[in-house]
Length: 96
Image (cartoon, rainbow, N blue to C red):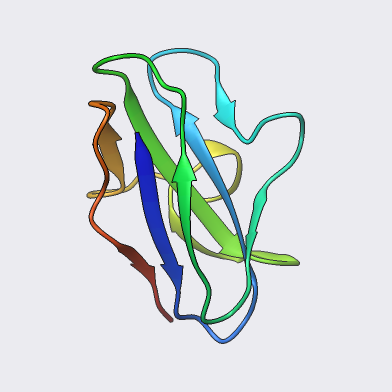
């Protein structure tokens, strides 16, 4: 599965992807993806078929400003999860 995500926020953003079906995080290892302001990334995930994946993003150095499930999968969200189907998400745009 490929997650397409764009940072339209004026500050750098950290991003992790969280499985809702097993204990797995991308990129893992206490790391996070970094998206500079204005940057778009295509992130490939080796997920299991039909697995539910949610994104969590936060401003670098300020996890009180967040999108999706936030840092450490700690928030609720309405439309930040996707089903692993081998395809690509629509572009997720992180804005103020």
